[in-house]
Image (cartoon, rainbow, N blue to C red; front, side, top):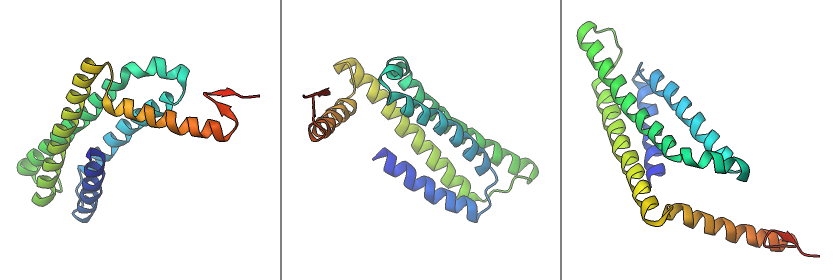
Length: 158
């Protein structure tokens, strides 16, 4: 649900920012590129068993970087509003600022909840429920794939 909400509202906000020529949007894009490059590098490395052992402990830091992105988005908006009222030089429109603040504040809250819930779940069960379900699904699918290709349990059957 978080992913759907996040990506749908980002798309809508980007349209609004483009239509209103929201200058601070460049800062948002730059920050987003950085955060996603770290996040997708993490996901990529997690696909390799040898790298996963080393990379897995940094998973909470990926979420922390995402939360920091939301704080940064709120700071950029505050600076834009301050600049607008002091000098009038920052090109912003109230509707875009209000939407940006609501968007970044909601993301901050949602990503913080995700982080806290994942930490609580990790302490209770030794791992997150989503992760264990994902692993079971992967094993099931890989097991079916292995059987279809003449392998059983990851070992070749002669």
